[in-house]
Figure (cartoon, helix red, strand yellow):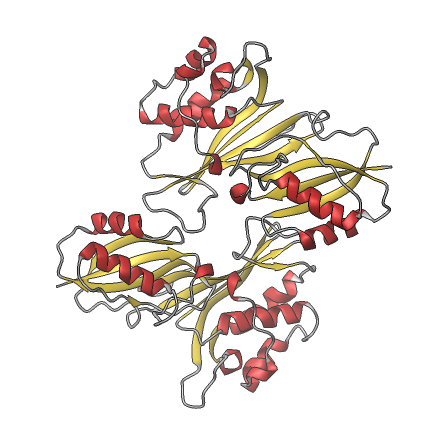
Amino acid sequence: MRTLKLNIAYRGTKYHGFQRQPNAVTIQGVLEQQLSRVLNQPVTVYGCSRTDTGVHANQFCLHLHTDRVIPCKNLVRAVNGYLPCDISILSCEEAAADFHARFDCTGKEYCYRIHNHESKNPFLTDLAYHYRRPMHDERMAEALKAVIGTHDFRSFCAQATEKSNTVRTIYDASLRRSGDMVEIFISGDGFLYNMVRIIVGTLLDISEGVFPPDAMEHIIAVGNRLEAGRTAMAHGLYLNRVFYEPFTK
Amino acid sequence: MRTLKLNIAYRGTKYHGFQRQPNAVTIQGVLEQQLSRVLNQPVTVYGCSRTDTGVHANQFCLHLHTDRVIPCKNLVRAVNGYLPCDISILSCEEAAADFHARFDCTGKEYCYRIHNHESKNPFLTDLAYHYRRPMHDERMAEALKAVIGTHDFRSFCAQATEKSNTVRTIYDASLRRSGDMVEIFISGDGFLYNMVRIIVGTLLDISEGVFPPDAMEHIIAVGNRLEAGRTAMAHGLYLNRVFYEPFTK
């Protein structure tokens, strides 16, 4: 039995997220269908994470088990030939028998893209959040620093429960502008449900003056979702990198 | 009567090119429809150029005449509100009464985008030509230099006629690679039908060894379309810039 580690990329617009669902088209569902077709046996894939409807991935890692002898390169080529244009296998390699894409994952980096211009960009439909008003980049970048480190992020969790552990470590967080494209990168050992989108929404509220510039520390400390800002739209969010080694910038 | 100069951008995938046609959806048709709606009078727009089905524009200039007093900024906002997501007005300004987007145009720059990777990129569907094999960048860049200057480009014209003037001046031509994205920029005072696509197709033939590295000079000299290479796919082509001043890089 072989364990294969695959990296994929996808445009999430037309999918009900990554995870298989009985009555909806999902990335996992489509992948398993085409992998099963090429390997000529039922295939289950184990993803590094879940992503919501409309969320994209520049790198998403998963593993699968198979007893077929097809070389990795040929598998990639054959399955890519069957996959729709919005899902692509980037690489495939042999992994240790007990490799697990989710449990062995040491961290992830998300990128949130904001197209900040009066007019929409016809090439960024569904690929970046279109924000028309001027943005206070420096105020946002400064506020963003507060999330770096180990904190209880329950204020930034859409479905916080008393039971679960809501402490996460954020390795790095930065905001970069190139012309009218603003990208917010956040990497950490794990993320709560909607965490990145609520952080970004809160930054936009800080930019607009709804919250004071130093609101982030307070919101983290108080531990209440109601104190944080809006949830930024899904279609600006990308799972950007997945780590299986100690984090490096 | 006012003359307005507009810059627009569009994703050409779903359109039968720029120019209005009776039984097809075109950029011009859709624009005129929404401009007429906002200005509440029939509007004709005059474009700087035509583009083919599937070809995109990062900048496309056009002009129109109107006696309405609506400020440019409000016109942009109102029309953008009605336009589909793949067409966007970037700017609008008052122009000289006799300004003509096509006749006053002093040059244009095209960009041809090639995604050179074994696997397709799900974010580049319809936005770049996907080319799987290794490319000889240097060989292509060297061959590309031959088009710079004033030449008779009838070899690179899809519908060459004996009558028309097929001499054009190419100001600059360059190939730039960033990772797996290769962009070929060509600017000049004018372009024949399919000229950029045939130049790019010929460069790919040179890369593949179908033609020798120095084939470009010969193909220009012989003046015969049959001597040039294939026509590269439309969806990699962008009208990138339009000039109304002397050309600058």
